[in-house]
Image (cartoon, rainbow, N blue to C red; front, side, top):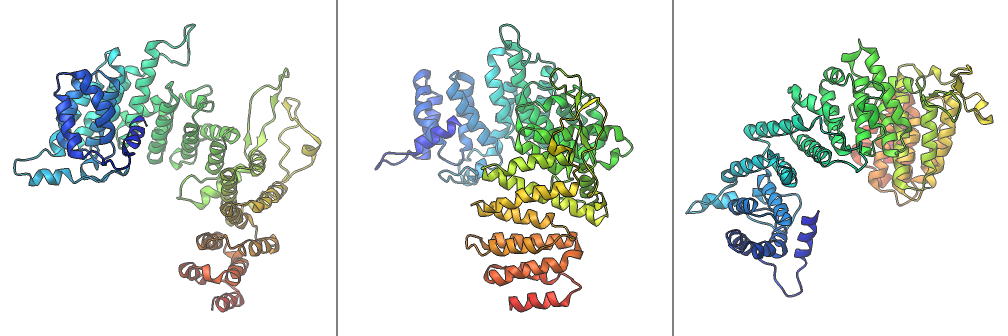
Amino acid sequence: MQIQNDAVSAARMPDGKKPVSYAQLARSIHELAASSDQKKSQRELVHHVFPKLAVYNSVDPSLAPSLLMLGQQCEDRTVLRYVYHYLARLLSDNGAQGLTSGGGIPTPNWDALADIDAVGGVTRADVVPLIVDWLSAEALNTDEDFHTRRLQALKALTYAPSTSSDIQAKLYKIIFSILDKVSDAPDMRKKGIFGASKESIIGSNLQYAALSALRRLPLDPHNPLHLYRAVQGISFADPVAVRHALEMTFELATQDPYAVAMALGKLIQPGGALEEVLHSHDVLARVSLARLCHTISRAKSLNERPDIKSQFNALLYQLLIDPSDTVCFEAITCALGKYDNTDRMEVRALGWYNLTREFLKVPYKVGKSSKKKCPQLLIKVVMRRLKTSFRSSSRPVLHAAARVVQELGKSRAAAFALGLLNIEGDIVNTYSKSNDWDHGTSESEENEETIRSLLASLMEVVRTTVACECVYVRAMVIKALIWMQSPQESFDELKLLIASEISDPSWSAALLNDVLLTLHARFKATPDMAIILLEIARIFATKVPGKIDADVLQLLWKVRVSSILSVIRLVYVFG
């Protein structure tokens, strides 16, 4: 960030003053690196040369020898930070082509210029091995005084070309050797009377740096050491290191859930490292935990181990009461059988069934009482949280909550298609009347509730969100209402709401077509609703015919319905 800020400051040249050319900057680096007055040259590099060089979008490979010389002879932290930064840019795959995504003043293709140079210029292929060797030696230096440089060298190494198997093998070896030595480092979270020790801080920093580097490398599912180190990292002290470890473990679980489940054997036990992640301050770590739990609990390869699947399900359900909306919503969608775009109807239906049948068990004591809090049906927990979210004034929270309701509708539609909706009339607030539980009952909770009544209560709150000023929130709410609509319920209220909404000129063509595509997806999930859905599509044709794309219209025309009248009406209105 400091280098970026320096580059921005350097780019703001005074009026009438031209920026320093790249050739001048390159010449200055060569001269200052060879200068005998190190203090003066370092001051010149930090304040004038390096910040201005950052304005350009690539680095000439011919600078590598001078940068390596500076790295060997300088001790100034700022100079070294720039040296590692530019060496990393030289290592990156696109750095020599002038195509870095960060932008900046364009530079030529250095390798092409070197090829046509009569004397023979320096290419990136010439300097990459030298840079990798030097950075590797830096990353393996165990001297405590060298610790900061070691971390920077390890990060720079991760920019090495991914196409070279030799370099990748060297990187894996370096990272695994570091993890092998710091895996048992003292936990800096357990501070003594004088705070965390220097040894624990260094160990924690190296754990973070090594796992961050491993996260940037290509995933190797066939290397058991990769899985071992990823799982090991879940127990580390640094929360970001734990996040990286969980992300890698999750990705490995998508390819071999059985092996990952076996590797996580001790960590999933009560009081284990996975349970500790529930209390981590890193939101993304808890999001990765939700995805990991879902992947393993739904794996077919573990069907013969229901005990393991039950453990991961229980951990996933704990995330439903996470204080972060981001984590809670991710846990809900995972519990519903959704975390990517590869939906399977049976998984979706099972998600809805479990949500209406499983209980969240929170075994903590209430006050001085020895009673444990009564387990809550998952759907009651979810409904209560969503209602709270829809009362928020934050547009991102409202949009995210509406998206979760849409996912609820998709799983419910899958359950309907497989005949699992006959449970919606069941009473849901009777877990146990035993005196061993603290039910926390109130007058409202003593009334018998059904899944159907819970959904009706939620949808009342959802419908009020169409008053939001943000059209994107309103569009997501309408898509959620479409998915939550049951074939047995009246569509009159939904049709009136849509007719009123799309009359607003703030609705773009993209948003309108997105809602029409939602109607088409809803038909595919529940073909029995084709006639009603086409009636809703006719409202769009009547109100905003000029904003409907031909491709979307063609999709709607392909819908096979039993009522020819609805099709004739649709064709007539669209002309």
